Length: 276
Image: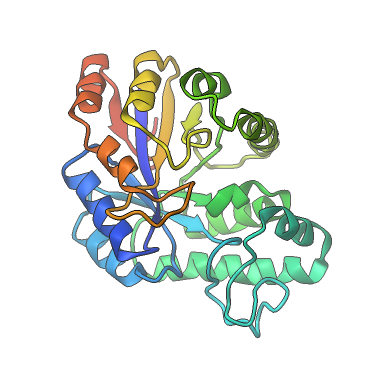
């Protein structure tokens, strides 16, 4: 069984960058997803160049973050400061219904792929902040750019609702809603997928921001699929955000008990570029 352990939001802040490096060098992290317009992206890229075993992908930001292009080029997507909406549902409706927004989406997405390419790092995978890469409009555009820029893998957040509820019934209604929405979008995406590798399972959606050691141990002990990705939001400092990043995810990635279970079960740590 193959296992990818990924950190999202690489490049967003220096605290996240530091946590990613610690988790890779001292822990079990195998890959990270880069925010190319993040406040600390230059630092992230420099550290990635010095750490060639850390696989790197593009974390597309089309909601809840900063754009690459200036506001004058994409006025239907961002505010006057260049930030996307914090509301994924309303943003998603606009992306689906507005032809102007769709044209600007194509420009912004290509700009993010192009910025990643300029760093001259291998693009092992693509995913989206708040999973916006599964939006039908975004996904159709993504297929073209993924092929053009050589992306190799794509995250489909097919998480296990029942494992999460058995561990923690907090926010059960939200988890059920996420399972329906992202499960449906993942299936819609899978049947249209071209030339991109996916894992059989992805864990992290249901416990996002709370990837505790015990929960990850439960996943690993009961994992019965050929391949899986588990994603985290590590940081050396808390930002007070309920969905992460947080130091707890970093501590989980450094857990000796988790490393022991990985070795005991013969799980092969990998990334999307080397996924068989």
